[in-house]
Length: 108
Image 1: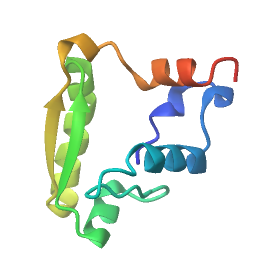
Image 2: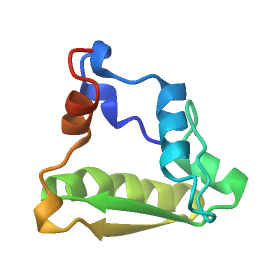
Image 3: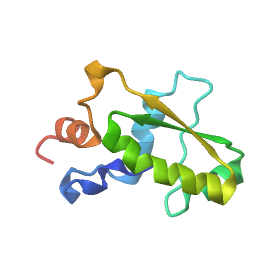
């Protein structure tokens, strides 16, 4: 799981274990979803080791795509991984990890 909260002040960042637990709870009813972590490893290496062949990334705008596309190309170069970009709906494009963290952990 990428750590999108890196840009937040340390006090607003949920702990790694807390994020994994929250994701596991939120996806517990989805039989085809596994929550795991690649912390400290290249995503390409993690995907190869567990047999993942495609990375799915959500993009809100051209800035997100500009950030994600070079990483997708490098993952493809390193391990043959494909990346699928899924655009968000316009009515949710304002949502960011910074906004989520600020509202989920107010005053933290």
